[in-house]
Image (cartoon, rainbow, N blue to C red; front, top):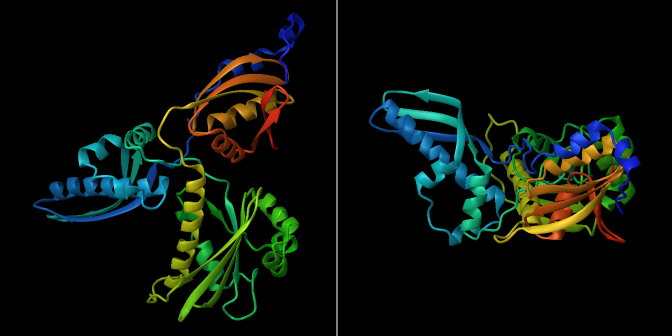
Length: 368
């Protein structure tokens, strides 16, 4: 879309719109807590309480680094790397928080949250030629169907399979958040168990839209926690071709103090791990030079421009944004970003931004 510059048009641009253009924040400065690892437990004994605490913090930092590394990379990425010295890890730590702690004369038991400096972590990964991903997907909406009793059940809230998925909610911190519907009247009206198992595209998109989700996963559990589970997952993406996979989970010892059966929990964790691996493999960035892209942003009004500006600023893989021209309903930007164009397109889509091929080059617009 051409950007027309005339004296009259320049006068018609409001001072607020010009100020918004000049104040475009640096990209990737969102408040995402992707680089924070919480609930890192340590139990250390040493010569005295202070020494035990110091050693506990160092141990928590190492554990957190390992967990963060696994969060950002595909399985097996660590095997080619040597052990990381503690002082290197410590330099990448931005801060830490004591969530819980108990001390004695020689022992420290604690649970910590470790926040890493994102730029330092990226530098480490690139320096070691490690491909990594840091773009969060839209939530995957999981429809947990319990077929352990023979008849498939979706909306009855009392099933143990549904409870295992609901229990996952607040513990998520990876690249693929998971949402489980509440099972309210609107959900029941949107889609039934037969529609879910048949992969009814209209019904799936209807309920996904209400929850602001991207992909929908129909997750069917059969067998039993006592003899072993078979889980079949039908993954229905917002765009592109769907896929199906299955996994088995052997029975695990039960714990009467645990509200969720360990076998069911392990099956849920295996499915979510598959989600994470799939997403990470598709969006990972290899070490190397950044890419540049000139594009036109199309918007209807000042509010539309401000919305797009805010979304661009939240995408960590966009490292620099330069406005080269601005009109009433379009702006021309130079973007510098990590990864290729398709990875950029995927990252933009998670913020409801669409990158299309226009007659005069790439055009960016809001999907909604």
